[in-house]
Length: 401
Image (tube, rainbow, N blue to C red):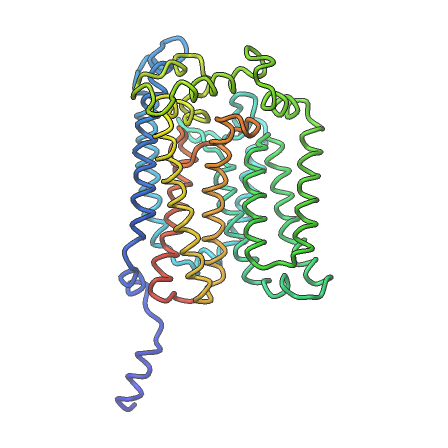
């Protein structure tokens, strides 16, 4: 073989796994800094919001920092899991899509089996693993989005075609899969996860340049199904009615939202100070989980709210920027998944804040990276690691899909 042929072969040789890892650019500093700040602020607020309940021997553990210690462990596990996920090439995530989807179905079915799923506050969303509870819906959402991104890559041309039958069938298949996932989530019940998953998936489909008429029909159909689900359940009707008129029954159905609004109102511009919240003193239920944002607003005021919103906006902005770069490189799977991650992160944060401020019905959704909960923080850390992996690969031109 001549020297020229050897040089040509070297140029066209696929890089080894070690060379790929070493070729990755340094992770996006905007996402890294914003995510780490959210994690740190989350630990700070979990400590502040949970001390009253965890220190009370009757309602808690008799240990003031019980929830803080557990959340710190969850964060460490999340960071370790993120480090592992960052090493996985995106081509492997794409190939594993069908297997991950099957795993999501398996977990959602498993949690519904009597004796396996654990009931907390009337919902069966957790599987016990030793001393911890794993919320399978968080894992299922990530796996479902990986599947949707892979499907959009494989069938993107069918979705964009002018032939109505072809494009309609291509659109119906992933929606049917997500509908089955939604049914399993509703059986827990976890209506909030259904809303986030469907909204994120619809956003990904829209960005895949689906036929607009069909997308509009899909939106109308989805909204109609959601309306039927709300009207068919007295529990969900109560949630909606209490959200619309919390002050009609401030000590009953509207109690949690009323206390949240009081907390936010007390914060005013600069807040009452760290640790000085009154609402967390057994007035506001779930103060360290779903309503952590209200305690933050009370202690840091509008200034704290704006800081948190800015950090979430940075993550979403960078996710869309990464997705656009992948799209320009022709890495469709990476592009759709990055869009999906950005949408998921932004939609869930928006819904949690909206619930706390009374502009959306109450749902059991955590504030990403901040609320207490091991499953949520670990899965979100892994999700952002996948996003950073996409960033690293696309900034070096990608490795192919």
